[in-house]
Image 1 (spheres, helix red, strand yellow):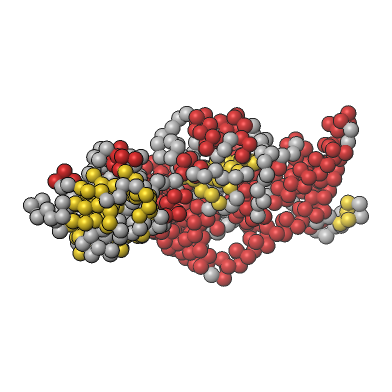
Image 2 (cartoon, helix red, strand yellow; image 1 turned 180 degrees about the vertical axis):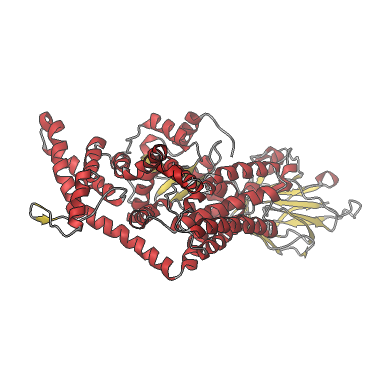
Length: 629
């Protein structure tokens, strides 16, 4: 990923590639991703945006077109907002969204803008825990007391933060939303709920109220604002303009707050507690299983951008128990992926990859793993799997010590390990450290042992997109006439028409090019396999008469790092004409935006006379293509 500072241009380029303002139904962002809901996804938009400087990856998931940008996503989001407006909603046919996709999109839109606020408060809580352990007397000072209530402020008033972000997402009046949510956390209601908890009956219009308290709650204010957005539109439509500004807030206020206290609050609180209880039951019955599950698959969940959906469960645990095991294991999963990208940094000999890995690793230290995943580990697959294994094993180790988190971590990572400290559970922090150390060491060792397709060989490709294979066949071999059959079925074009100067100007040799109809490549003659390029998209052959052939599938397909290609031979194999050499997923490669025009070259063509039997039209596999003499 190229470094970029012109975020206005990047936003403009993204807007252009997705089809302009009219094609965007809605958009939001999370900590690292720009999330767009498009009416239609333009052809090749994914591959083109992927290649823009400043873009790490593009993911289509959950009904969203997600552009992974990293820590500067806010800059791009703000630039895009300036271009089309934050409240933009396209007028084109809006795609039908599955309910699960809508839930995930809502959680992301609500929590992403406040994640760093919660993270800052969580870090402050962790530091206060450490200070209290160092000197217990400091906990009695006014300074400690002030910092302590400061650290709890965003959690105590979480419904207010949710009111602001949810109102923006559901497109309703944010001030009415804040007013209603403030009523939920009014100390007077907390006192009334306490009386109900002791057995007193308090009613509203003869309906008994529940003892639910809404401080630090997630789902009740979220559903409150959703209901408000529905009600507000209808009230505004029904009232005359002259009184709407005054009576819309009044009517919404007196309906929504009691509705939440009577119905919305108790039901949503029960739902969140139920899901949390299900996870906690698994944790109580088999802590190691719960740990392995979270430590192993959490980063897979992050890939699909659905990780915000677990937030209400975590918050419910902190609200009811004062601690949470999920985040303890989630942290180790993050650390495992961090270790994987540092493992790539240590093993790779590719200068560009080492730079990318180091940068992504530093970002992962702070709990943001998308650059590490999309930029490095998932790209090479094996490091990602190593990170998941390390995270799973490390989490199991932590579970053996009974590790828990006693303060919420919005961005779990190395800096939130102190959240596992508790005077009442001294082994919790030790276990979290042991689990994290296990994840780091095991993951790095696995990456070094298992390895990955290090693109070090590509560093030599400065004058041409790919290196031609080097033949060991003597040029003194008899240059007898050799017939070459077509290795693919497709449309033959002249080499001069290929959209790559290294081929069209015959820098790598003379020959023809074929636009394939399918994904199968066979040997054009009897030969010895001299080279199978590391990225698996090209094969070099040495013929009996000394001719050296290169079959290069696609243009710039080296960037796929072998994905969608499957070599069927290895270097040193002796093949006959028609022997299958390579298979590739034509549709997947084209969807990724690559041109599959395949040059078939005689590398040492200056030593031979080439007769091209077909330089245009359709050709079938194993039909005569050219002769070399």
